[in-house]
Length: 423
Image 1 (tube, rainbow, N blue to C red):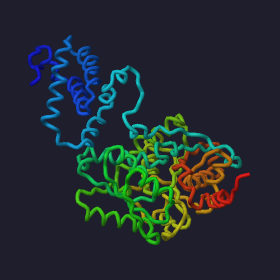
Image 2: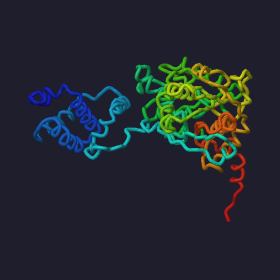
Image 3: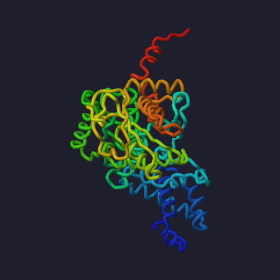
């Protein structure tokens, strides 16, 4: 109003509308970056077109005042705060350039908007001896190649909405076996958070490098203490670090809600409601609980099964132990796991999971991780039961196999590749 806007009566009514305020925020952002040519273009193409017939002199006066305001009164908020506010309205970002204000543009505001909507495929060759049909949801096609992308995105969104965290003041802390840490790492990078992760040292080198590549701080824990020791270390860091906040996938209801709101509906839609059985390995328990609850809400007759490692079958009354199915069998019962919806928790050995993951690559063209092999073994167990003949069984391939190149999954191939010579 100090730059002549108050002199224009037609503006007064429009100043009350959120659309005008959005346009002015867009202009202010451009001024802050010194892009005055874009400011003039946006002002000419949006304010004049959508608000009132104005003159170039008013645009000059307004943008000049904004530029003066920038020099005289630099905002105290960090740029990450500005970015987080801008990202809350995808239309705002698109309006910062005339070429991006076209109707029908489908460019996402940032990488977090790409999470979800993964495809499903039938498994054909590995199911040849089965009486049921098996379909797999390809979560390796998420932006960071795992089902955990959904959870990481949802937990941060919900914590922000509740005012619990913000990029300019919060340090995020989380225990992980790998994929959750990677999911949180790319989201934290996109939103401007500092992230500290704890992880057992037995996990693959690819996981470590990927987290570090996103700028996360990584602390390895004693492998003999399993995920329990990793969680304990995360609590210790949270308690002694000012402004630290642990999202805690094992206790956070947003974990379950992410799958209730997205994964479950996607499976229901892609199968046209014809799914009979859903089977999923149990790590944090969020996927099987969220998807299971949603599918049961649509059809109470759908059966839900969990999966855990034979070597660490605590949900079947056994004791925790070492295994190679990274992400499953965390050694304790997670607080968010809904056991009431499960028909049974199937057991799969590490050797079975590794062998099936290799078969998925060579027989189905699906390069996936060890947990994908475990889920598929369990799905085939169910598909071979006489009572399930002709039924549709759905499972999930949680992560991409390239993340396991240094693990036991591809050890023999790695050894073979290292011995190769040119000819």
